[in-house]
Amino acid sequence: MDMRRLLLVLMLAVGALVVPSLPHAAACSCATVDVRERLPEADGAFVGTLLSRDDPRPVNGAFSSATVIRYRYRVERVVKGDIPSGTVDIWAAAEGASCGLETPPGQRAGLLLDRQGDRWTSGLCSQADPDALVQDGQALPPPSGTVVPAVLVGASDGGGSGGRPILAGGAGAALLAAGAAGLRRRR
Image 1 (spheres, rainbow, N blue to C red):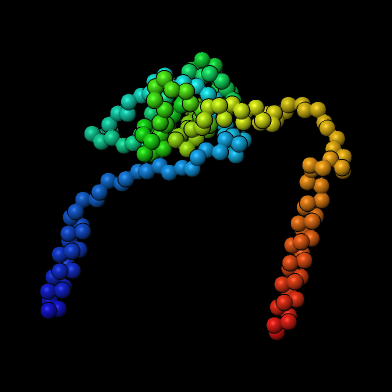
Image 2: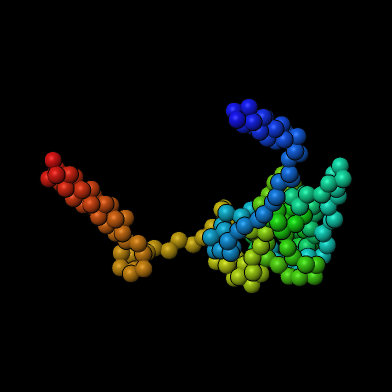
């Protein structure tokens, strides 16, 4: 009986070594893009229409959805960054399964961009509704170095944060004191 178990374990171990490893699956999962939250941290953003995309080339006879390819867009409106007018090349994975862009040729899209060296990059999780991108882009603060007129805000502005940080700090201290008192009572 013990010999059969040993033989079974050895056969399973050898089988695990002989069986080729399966290719890794890719899947992209991202929440809806909150443009107001993501736009300030993006290096660039624009609204445009996809003109073309490169076909991914197989490497050693294999194709990966993560292969990075070039997408060429006609720029309709620059929302943020030093994006050229006319056309711009964006680099992203070849397929949506690997977070590549999923814009059909001829369709209008909004894209948040990252700068990597001399290339603009993006992906499925950085695609945004074009109209929302334009609207939220108008609310961006001006680039650093831009002179903005100063506005004095009085204590009675009603909408400022006034004493909130002090109030929050006081509430935190009161909770700590109450907790410490409760511990002392238990002892």
